[in-house]
Image (cartoon, rainbow, N blue to C red):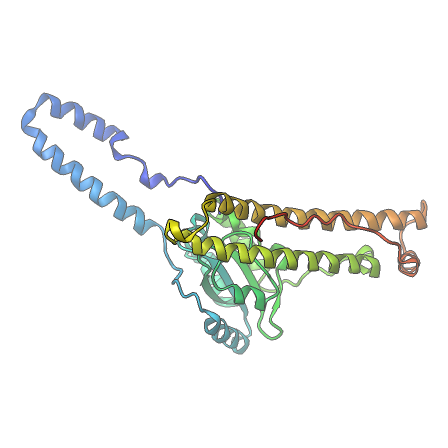
Length: 309
């Protein structure tokens, strides 16, 4: 979810043309003032209710949802479907937006045919962290985060695309239909010659370990800031707001850093292959020569610096 998004349903009703005309008339006809006041009161009372109805609140505040996941995995396995976990929260504009998109008839039909779907409440990203870890994710970076899971192996299939729905509210419904239809039977990409290099694979493992270590620290930050959010002033640090901003900036920066490391690793391996292949195309033999040399290609890891995490 992105900050600063406004809900058009909550714009002041007094700015509408009807209300402006009404205000002019009541100054001319005092007898209308009581009726006008009553009408304004009705509008103010009913408008928030309509806005509330317009946005689903499907996340159930069940912060111990592992049993839900176990049952859904068994159901998906028996039905030969994939398990779809949506990790979100009712406070999140984009979580609401994705839940609303699930009501689209075409998308709903895709979900019914190919997935067993569960919505998991993650609070302020500090709850149900054991579910994230079960599928190899130390911390999520946005709400909602979507997991597509093979129920037989419990493999997270869309690991590289799990963060895609952090702007779900503004994502066109056509994109949502296409994405969920594709992941109904898609498998992770296997890569080509570069990805087959043992040197490249070792660098990817280094990056995965870095992300897991940093994600574990970030998850602790979520737990602390989530607890402090609802605590009395006496029970939280004086600089709570700064620490909350630090965690928020960290969660945005870490996925960008991981993506940059993967790009750096690929560029370094390609550069090393070019040194060996010269002007010729890469071949299996070029990859084998690189792996035999096992060059020391050092990545630029920069762990987050924090006074408490």
